[in-house]
Length: 136
Image 1 (cartoon, rainbow, N blue to C red):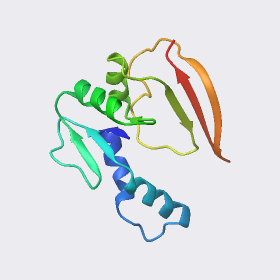
Image 2: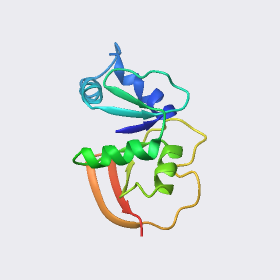
Image 3: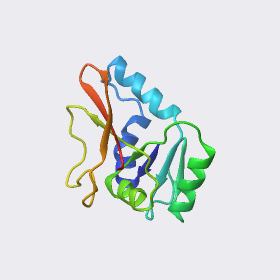
Image 4: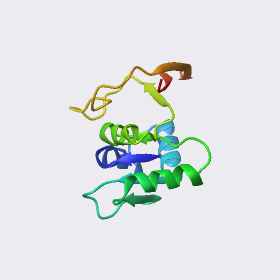
């Protein structure tokens, strides 16, 4: 998972157990903690556990990750996603629809996009749907 600074700071909530968590929240937190994360930021000087800071040449760092890792690399953060789109580094857009609100004041894409083509619709759990789009 590659995060922009703001989204990473939101997701750091899962780093520490919370007293009122339900079992599914504890399970999600354990999964979050176990996954390697890369954080793209010009302002952070350090990141939390199992995370690597990318503060220099983002294009080179992401191209290296794409070459070295197998499987999907997810991107979270509208400005980061736009930067990677502009660099031609996005292979597909997977949009998860879930009835919660996180953050504010930032559009999903930070500037108009060419119309992507819908490739797949998957039901993840009863209240979450993933839409996969690919650039045309």
